[in-house]
Image (spheres, rainbow, N blue to C red):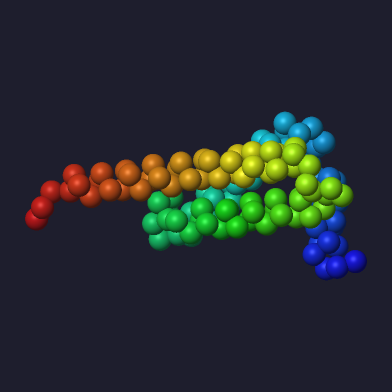
Length: 117
């Protein structure tokens, strides 16, 4: 077995053991995991929630997870695979991106309201 297939199979086995089988709950796990990872990384960012790199890390992790999901499937060309993968990506990236944009807008607005000295 090729290394990436073995890795994808092990990842899928781990997720199956840890996560519930209900697909709706798995969607919520995407949302909560992405926000959790984003917030933890933002703690270490100089700009905090306005930093771009925590969102980039969440994006890389999300795309890696979805690639592993597609690789682990026996027939990845089915329509529902790409639909579900697309929604998983949206669920994972929506709130971290929205929080980052809001933090940047608030940061910019704060700079505009600073009195000149």
